[in-house]
Image (cartoon, rainbow, N blue to C red; front, side, top):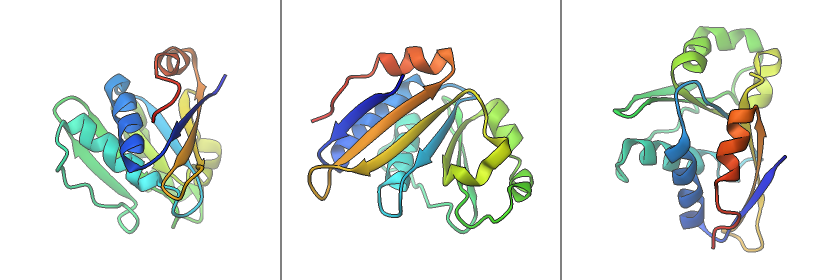
Length: 158
């Protein structure tokens, strides 16, 4: 079961990220799929700012650090960018197992996880929309808990 959410601009992306942040809990793993420039990092920033309840929260890209950790009041969020990894064994050095157990894990370029990909997760595929700023988000939940939470989201964002 997947759910498609269409947004027309960055504001729609931020609204979807906030909806998912509102239902997030420790142990959640969200895998962000999409080509360069599709808005994976923008979605993750909006998600983290929503969890922080602070639209001005500084959220640097983990492109070079590989992971940014946010110890937020409501729940911790670990933002991973695995683009620069060449071997899934390198992921262990990032303490990803700790994130999987105790935090929300937002993971860009999740294909690098290979055999470490958790079974209970939410895959988000981002595709171009009908205008330059629009996006189509395909949410693919794996695990009963994600299915229930995704079912509660509105179908389309304007």
